[in-house]
Image 1 (cartoon, chains in turn green, orange):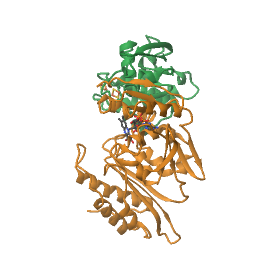
Image 2: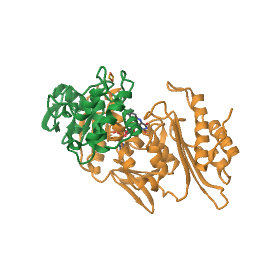
Image 3: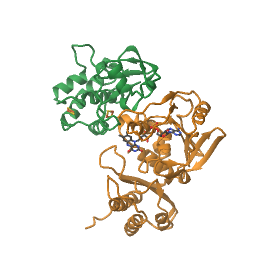
Image 4: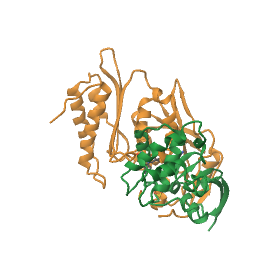
Length: 167
Length: 292
Ligand SMILES: Cc1cc2nc3c(=O)[nH]c(=O)nc-3n(C[C@H](O)[C@H](O)[C@H](O)COP(=O)(O)OP(=O)(O)OC[C@H]3O[C@@H](n4cnc5c(N)ncnc54)[C@H](O)[C@@H]3O)c2cc1C
Ligand code: FES
Ligand code: FES
């Protein structure tokens, strides 16, 4: 089986992987790069668990080929915290508001919310709910997730250092 | 599931992409945003021997507005339409319809060209193309040709595009100032494909008579359709409550959607009537009385 090399920046580090062209970015992250924070639920674009940030935009990593990610900058849930012992403001807000239970959906929701607030730090509740419609959570009922994202907005307000958190 | 195996190429030009498609005798497929093709591959509904990634071809992602109309490059993404400063005024119907397409993450990748080529009967962009007399600009080995949207969509997920051709752009005629319009759709959840949808617009003469009505519907046939009997009914009339009710009945009677896993055909037919009623009332600025 022919393989090709794909190279990109993952959470600030240059990485490369030899993959079959059919390998999704989600599988490349999890199986080739051992970055298992990104979860895979449906594998056809419906659940949002696999959301990662490519060049600043939240996208489904199950609907993106690893070869298509060549040359891009990727942020996964592993790239949100500033260091292994500290949570990002968004993550801290999720903890404070009990915005997760089983945690399966959480990586996709965190990356989605991080991309949203980085682009639109003043997103209102309606916008947040609209955006989160692309992420299924079978546990929380969403109320605490929306509260956590609303509460994290201050950390993304323009011109603060957090607005530049790991793009 | 995982996609079946295929080769992958990422040409830098349209000519190169077309040549690659031609070399594979119909067995190669373009990939743009991948937001429809990747699910098709995952379900093994498509198994091309090669994917030709067109996303890095220059010059296909611009939105141009001039006196001849609006041109949307094939690689224009839903997010580009959503964020374009002038488009909401230059074509409010397009902007309103595209707000209903999919979710945030999918909107960051899905493209105009991909949606039109995929030709889902419930998709918004094909619906707008059919409603607005759009021209699909197609590039092939012989150069460019242009096909009217109504002839372009030939059935469910089928179009007039040949295997070795690519969509370069979609052209919409100029939007007239002061036009009456509305877009209405119903989906079970935010971002889902519509169960049915209606796009309509018309101009008014000095006596408030309807001039040049265009009414299109999605989700009620094997392709986006124009509701010609409804257009005939509306032409030359003044839109009042009685006409709105008559229009709803005319619309519902003019379609015969099939039953499928999402809804029985009769449900979609009835829904179309409701949506036409809402859309026409909204376009005309009418407040309808509640019906028993
Ligand atoms: C969960 C989910 C919900 C969705 N909801 C909606 C919705 O509500 N409304 C809606 O309209 N869409 C919806 N979509 C589909 C989405 O809008 C797609 O982005 C779009 O239909 C296809 O665009 P693409 O660029 O991703 O195309 P791709 O998936 O890359 O390609 C689709 C097809 O078009 C062909 N193609 C692509 N570009 C060209 C070109 N330039 N020339 C010729 N052929 C080309 C490909 O070969 C393929 O056959 C949804 C998708 C998902 C996963
Ligand atoms: S695994 Fe990608 S959207 Fe469900
Ligand atoms: S916390 Fe369990 S799916 Fe969201």
